[in-house]
Length: 166
Image 1: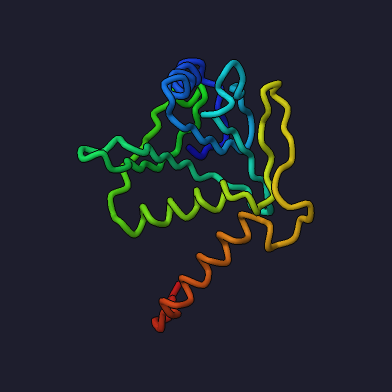
Image 2: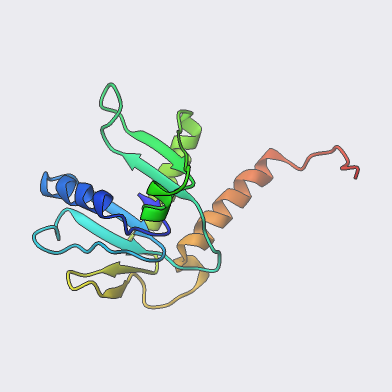
């Protein structure tokens, strides 16, 4: 799961239950996180924060075996896992079904969770510790890697030849 905040107690309880059942739970939380990998969850729960040049707002969710034939389920949406988002607003998650878009989400998660990018991981006491390479250069920046890959992909499609008229 990739989000900006995690503070909803019901959602946290469900994630803990999944972790206790042996499900590997990887969370990428940019900001407020009221959950921590303690009390026996250290082996199945990882909470990571990846900060960089860009203020990200994407929320992406991948459930490893939720589909009808055991395949992953993918969702994108607007909601963080916060009480104000889940209880007091109309927020939307939509399924991602196209294989190309699912592959892109997989690449983003792989990049954000890679061992060779600068990130912060929460320990059992709730403290964040830096992980990854010691040097913070573009090659070690997950956001930079994603930006470069996506920019190169767009350039391969070519520049539109039609003029924009305002």
